[in-house]
Length: 377
Image (tube, rainbow, N blue to C red; front, side, top):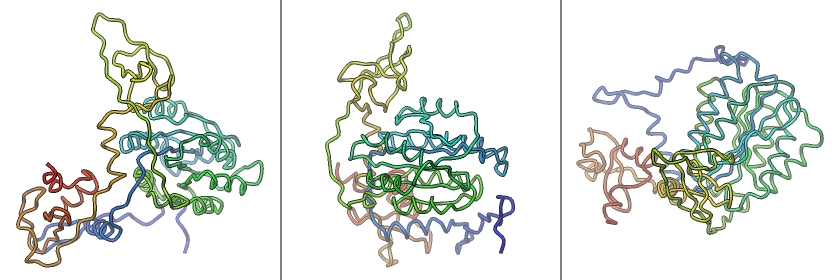
């Protein structure tokens, strides 16, 4: 059977097949039940709070292909810009960097940073494609840049690969061994076809490997990388707990008649009207979370830290109510009566019952049980 070469030649994505009709004639998403069953089977998974991730982008001549309208380069730039925004929102105390492959070389487009504006500006400067991709050069550069990354952070690489070959100057297996020694997890998103060496790299470094079939699938592939990896994936199986020094800056706003602050934005000194003052060296920064350009202290706010806290201490999975007589009369979350034959769930700690939609909201968005929070005062 022939494999579709383009997204429009493949099978139609019949998303409506994920809907089913209940006894009352209402439409239900069957994918909700699948995710709830998976959570119950896996349980609470501890994930890392601090990630150091380099996104390696293939900007070789293969990016000029028009199977993605208008071409691969334009589509991927839009998706990567959205990934940068979503990644820093989901992982506010993590850092992201950009590396480009083209003309047989690797270019450091943006260093590891938590500055959304600096990363988006660097991505906007990426306008040309050409030549061949060099996987070995990109991985060697990543190893040199991540060599001094603290061990408490998750070292990750996301490789967006559009070519069918790689132009390497030497033995790439030695580079793969170096990647493994540095405990860097390499996840690969392919845009054309499966390349054997990419599958080997992702397997040996305990990363993910996927081939996108269309623009929407490529968007979902990026979205699947927003959540931090499980700490059980760390090579060595023992994750050390360390104290990480961070600072909570004070926000300063200039008066209308005052002179703007002189501060830093992504390593550049500029005039800013609203600044965050580093508690250690009193340097003004344009945004948080960020790293102080003078003393290197990580600057965050309390909401950023709280948003990342659930990765370290996840909410335990709720158990489904198998006995109809023990089902809750009202959902503790939305205070509505469950419909007949509707599956409900119960928190093992506070014994409160929840409907299926609230169960999904608590585990995927809120990451807290309101019943347990009310008990704790």
